[in-house]
Length: 359
Ligand code: SAH
Image 1 (cartoon, helix red, strand yellow):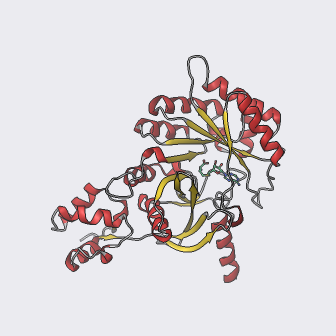
Image 2 (spheres, protein in one colour):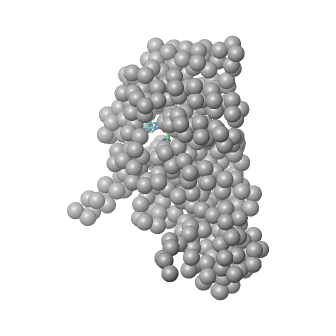
Image 3 (cartoon, rainbow, N blue to C red):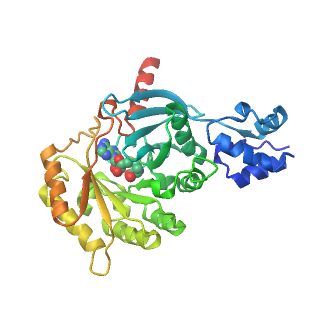
């Protein structure tokens, strides 16, 4: 008989689990017993209502693995929790639990490393190692919920990796995390952040899921954007904003723009005026009134990039110019400032420390 790879239980839909159990000679209703428990963080071995025989049959063809907490940092300032999770093959990713007035949201990683090459970002320094599976995407939500004992009400895909460069797994994850029998997080409480893979934005729009799309814009002209984000050489700002219009037309969901403020690069008053003009002219003409929102993020300084964070005054002035031009802008609250909670940094640090230990 040909050797086939074991299936990952956390990647299966209820229907697929049912088919798998039927193929093992198990009754269909078992899927209804097993699926919710898997999504609560229990392996088949830990389920008291599943017999030994069923478990052995499942173990022969499938596996269950939750990301393992390798490191955990809790912010003394605001309770933000940062996890370094280890996956089955020893690779690590980061997830962050953030507490807001309206509830707890998790920021998850979508790839081990990243190939997008943004100049300010720590996650891309070693390139992409591999995509995460949908079970590993979901596993971060389940494992963080289990470890912290908190009920997680929202997900943002803003951790390590480019979610749209792992399209199929992300789409399957969106389906799984939304299941009422499982984690049950509503699409309206899910955001996906992208550096701007236009072809994939269109594929996502075609799904018509009411999730929030966040665009990492970071500059208002092609020259500045291409210098810090290589993807801009493939898809210009105009091309990207056109895709945003199509996304809004398909989903009716407001688009959020991320703008990282880098001292002396993109944080001047002129840059702010340029950004306001760009967004208003492209997205809010008389015939279109797309609701937009700009999230300003003072850059987290990454040693390798040499970029510096804009001062508080510059950030305030930048936001004021946007508001004056009718664009809603918020400055991201820096959560977990004391635990280096921005993505990519913990994984990189841990890898460097381990490498040093092995030398
Ligand atoms: N690849 C996706 C999601 C991951 S990054 C994307 O590009 O959107 C999540 C957000 O953090 C993005 O807006 C990204 O540009 C931003 N970011 C990355 N490194 C940063 C840093 N050093 N300081 C501030 N924001 C950063």
